[in-house]
Image: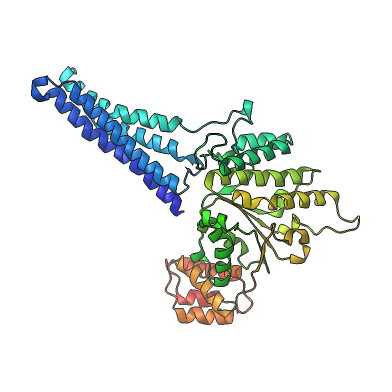
Length: 462
């Protein structure tokens, strides 16, 4: 989230800079047109020098902004290329600078016919804006488009290319594309590309799965589970944030399996992990990738991971979360009782799990039937860490209640929260959330805007 905010601020700064440079430089040029220095001997050299100065300053500011974003590995925001967004911001900034002068001239024209003198401010602003407009148009046109007629020409995971290759079952095309992209990142001189990840433009609406940019949940919203959060920090967040240092040590992020009773907050944790990493996440159930049609389930698994690769190439990483993952990674029996379609899905899934670390993809699964998971998926390099999310103890229940109440106006004292935590033995996170929600409904029924102690007490089971 912080990266996206920083990107938006940088792009907005580009637009604001374009506005003020245009206004200031336009005023200087206007003064030279109306009252040139040295009786006009240096005209039009002075306006030309000012335009060149605008070009130099605008180029320097653009370079600083893009250099800052690139140094932090930010190449896109919400699926749009940062170069293009900065170009659009520059166009908006110059347009905003020209608008007041244009409106003033149009209003004056309703009273008196325009003269050369009255048009001087607009001409001056247009001359000052011209260099910025040129830079903005160059930025806007900079991203390379992938030609669908020559799909193998660029090593990019373009979503339309991925979908077309998937539909025709061209597994080798995707594999070759992945290899080419990986090679270009390892050897920047292999195709003349710079030593930075190329920007990719993703249209999320065209993808088959629902990818979320912002889940609205972070680790601070997760009550308790400090040990689990520390483990996720070590196994997933640190390897991804350490960058070259982690790569030098051969450390890649771990794939995770949460297991435990229903309602203990496994999905909530996955959403929080996505926010901590600032990566898009697909939150699915096993049924979302299973199909009643022969061969289609394995193809859907393949599509899911290929979309994850496409997004990871654009955003720096991606997270796949599958609840009820035991329906996808079913235990395969040695006898003939295992359905052939189930075996295909498991094999397809296992193959993709082995490659997640290469593309900064983190897989997180959740199940309350650990014994049903195929054991081949549990080995290192596929699902690396199993984390039990059990029923919370008393202290954890109190932290969950505080986290739930923190999101709502309330006057519930900490003493009452401790008493409620003591009386809710056996409750899971979902039960505690429901209890606070019931208290909020009672406040609403009383036409109150605040949850009060009596609401919590009345929501407690009798």
